[in-house]
Length: 211
Image 1 (cartoon, one colour):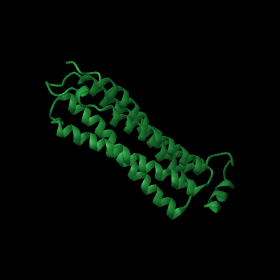
Image 2 (cartoon, rainbow, N blue to C red):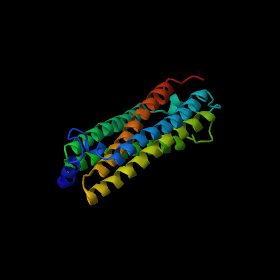
Image 3 (spheres, one colour):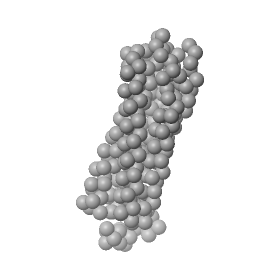
């Protein structure tokens, strides 16, 4: 790991973070920012659809009748903490501390898995209450929006696991560090999207007790 770093240091500004020390890494990071623009467009469309259909409950249960404050707060705490630990992982990566990077990525994975467990439990609870995609336009838009975010979180967890395997095989290089950094951007993006879901979907939905 240290030899790889010294090799890159010979060809790069020593003040430049490892993930930016190769042209491929810089281009990949730039390309990922462009990809995030497409993701923003996707979620913007889902949010717009949700807000248009908020009042169309078709006589079914209102969100304020089913949303549970405790579960939503726990999910939010898990995801916020995972974003923080992901940041700590990047900090350790830039210190060339592979062990520290592994530790904080593992904690991030555990928190992300905890978030998913609570979300799945939430969906199961709604189904037991008789709420599904076909219940109303509102609940359809709710499940699509939150489910899409949950699918992204699942993908993110799998992605980080694959990167950790590569780190184990290849060590910390300009190539592997750029992959870690890009995955961290993705994870922070999902955290930001959840803040909008927490505010726009759950907080507003909890006061929708009157049709």
